[in-house]
Image: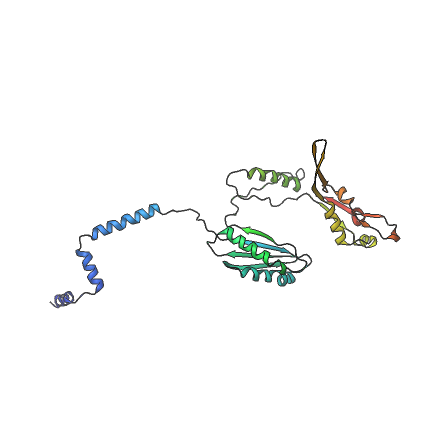
Amino acid sequence: MHDSTHANEHASMPLNIAGKLAQAFIHSKITLLIIIAITLVGLLALVVTPREYNPKIVVPAANIIVAKPGANASEVRDLVVRPLEAIMRAQAGVDHTFGYAADDVGVVTVQFKVGQNQEDSLVKLYNQLMQNMDRIPPGAMQPIVKPINVDDVPIMTIVLAAANAQLIDEQKLREVGLLLMEQLRNVPGVSLTEVVGGRARAVNVWLDPLRMQSRGVSLEQVSKMLQGSNISAPLGDLVALDRSIPLRLSGTLRTAADVGDVIVGVSPPQKGAMPVSYTHLTLPTKRIV
């Protein structure tokens, strides 16, 4: 009797907005139609909405590499990395920047906000860099910009190994890798290929400081003369007898003997004023890699 009295009291109480809405849907005849319509709309959205296994996320970013030969990590940080970070951070759309300083080189990574156009972001980065080239410290080399793409991640690694290291050395193994890389680049869908490891072909020469001092030749002079002797460039065309003959300067250094024959200076008059070649300044040991 007591319970039925409380039930009658609750039934006679006025309903609030939620109660009135629930009562209207309970007794309405279109409630079932609304439920069916919502279900159909959800199924249609599930079918129409595009889905990707790996969604395309655009995060424009780039590395700016600045070399400053002869500077230690602290100098590179204070003269190159920090000013360059401030310059890049000043442009619109940059999310954050962070730098890395080491001996002789500094790297600043610039990341833009997610969703921005990659090409437009790189154009803004180049413009910002070119407008502030006068702030590059003396002795620093031209900055190198390398874009970073989140899609450029290795999906396959091929390892080449020699069964007999005495028959195939590191240089030949690298040459095989380069030939294989050229073939892989022709495969549709391949974005980036790279060969890591092995030994690249080079001529290593060790200079003797005592010989350089006795000949009156500096390291900078040797470097400039070596770079100037390793040139290959077109010289134009020679026109004669209704014929056009292309002319080309072929001065590329190919062997250790070519490097040794480069004239890097002239000894002082008291030494006989004889030409000084690269061979006169090196230690007896040479190695061709």
